[in-house]
Image 1 (cartoon, rainbow over the protein chains, first blue to last red):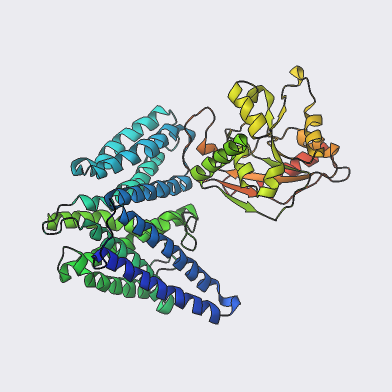
Image 2: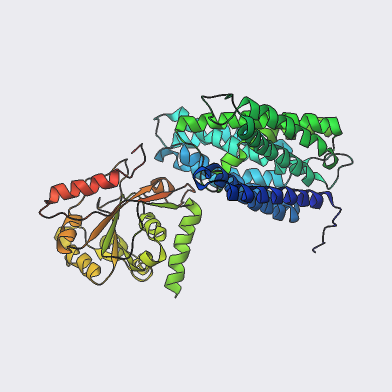
Length: 316
Length: 205
């Protein structure tokens, strides 16, 4: 049965708000494109490509939310699959890893999402760190190739931890039973995603406007102290102002947003370090202007498990 | 009709699985042409075939080993009816038809060929030495263009002898066309063609 959501539903209000922000961004981007000389347009063109991609991403999340829990599970399952594909593509494995990769893609990934779906907390929170960690190297040993064995086993495990385990903690938020917050857990996901993503965007904006001093020149050519401070501060404030969609009071939402933003920022640095080591700029090319799925989600990967466990500890 | 649907679904499946992307060094119009690539998987020719723009795809036919593709009804159906392959016999001693004549006839009738001059699927890195067919064909068809196509990663998607394909990203790099030069000998030409293909490979290979 399809029930039309009421306009006063917080989720609908949120999406209307996001739509309004994107609309303003789109108008600003188009005006900038008109008023900038073609020779200096590269940054503006990239900005507009990013804004267009944001429309698509917001729409996809909106559609997933409309289908409720199953929609969110399917969305993040696909996101994990795409992220793992980018990760494994860029970290060379050998032919002896064939069965390990078959197991990673076709067993571990779907099983993790089934466990999240049936809300078996005791197993989904250790499935990859314990069972994946022990069983995949056994399959690798069966492949009989000892060249760089530990390195290869570590790469696959790392890929699964980042792309599957960490990302699956976003839909896992639906499994939390918080008193007085029943049937509203989708908003917890909205809170996490909005805070992390706005932090990325605001760091980018602050960095472009007044970024001077590189924060980690060896890891990232674009992250500056100014972008970091301005972005984290403004995204944390935004998180606090969204307290009404969370089970937290204003101060709680503020602190949660700060933790999320710091984890997201540091996660971005870690993922940058891996990219620099591989000599690449982006994980992939799937999202116009942004790079790959992992480029957009690196901060979510690091923020989601911590947000999940803090919320679980304090609220249930 | 059904054959077109199968061809489309196979290339759609490969595209979905590998997120395949194509890079062109220049835009090409239909012409007497051979696309030659590095060979590591049965997915290779489908990847090249589906990377081609519609106008080029219509005239493209893969050159395939008769010994392999004549075995079994499904293989025969796929290579003949779906992909319109040009089947050649690799082993000279058991040969009934001259492979060069078959390929030249296909070129003269307006087709473009997809060819893997290593002659077999390469399990290692880099490129095996080229078979001389590429040279003999260029010699017979003077206007023939040869376009190198480097396929990245498909070896990891469908390793030789494995059934389950892995979802990993693949790319096809199309290089600039080259032609047999006046008086160029077999060895020099094959070396030049091989270097042009290797030059398209990203750093590692």
